[in-house]
Image 1 (cartoon, rainbow, N blue to C red):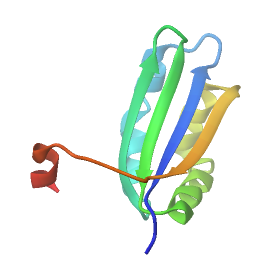
Image 2: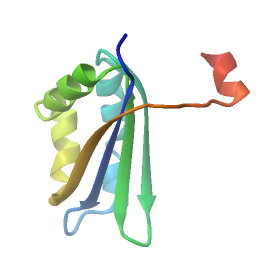
Image 3: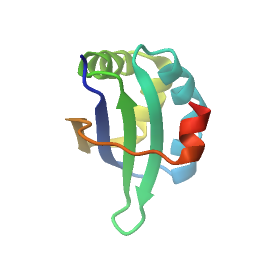
Image 4: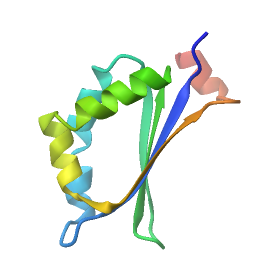
Length: 110
């Protein structure tokens, strides 16, 4: 049995980049992710106090997460997003999902 993976990427924006520029990449990144094997869910949040973004993606397994990460760096939509990031601030982690819970609303939609 494969283990679900949560990918957590934290980063800051490059100098002279607006939040809206990053948010404008959403539809392109969503389209890219939806084509990737093993993709489950993505959310993007911002810690205003630290000016740090948190990109969380759930994957069916580690190999899917790693393959998509490699593909993103070659994809035109991915390159647009990456160009907006301060690459020195990027931290990526792949962690196994050990426990989970969903609201009844989410469960009925699945």
